[in-house]
Image: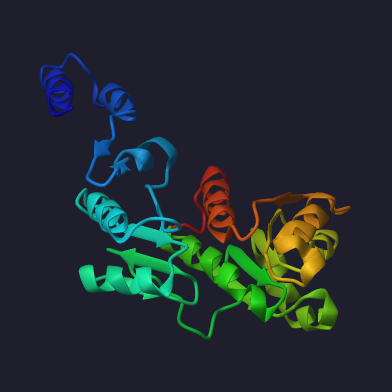
Length: 259
């Protein structure tokens, strides 16, 4: 891999490749193979606009450490998602300069993760959580968006059982460029806001609910079958995925609101 890179750089130095041509060749530069079956992709940010993020679910301590170290060694800030408290504590012990947010199951290294309350309800992206039980997924979305430089706000506990509670936030929701709406139970909040506002909505069903919610399947189907136009749906409990989608949308529409 290094010899290939040397060849590209030599060609740039000799004028046989322009910097733009070299950049295009490097867009798909090979990954790095590490121990414990871990491969990191240091050029994902170049290809896709977002650097690789570590998914914590199901990974051993050794795999998590390798993945975080491998990305951090490239000089990029690292975000890890869906971490248990034990995993987060282990990463803090191994990377004392990092930050673990158990309320969002997020760990960051090399970039501050701002999730301290009280949360502003203003932003180019606003995350709306239907209930307090949906907050872990909403905070995952909020933290991810802020990690990638989006000016993001949060409103919480504004679900349809007490919809009047959203009234004080309508102005900020209207001023946002797009919304991430997080809801369990029947997932109705996405449809309500889709029928009230002119903003694109990224809906996140959560696994919150009683037995017939089927761990979020009811909310997922409710959001997919929304009568309100302009509602797009990600997977159950995938606050990270909704936030990354929001980042790409904001960048594609002119980078306004992204540092």
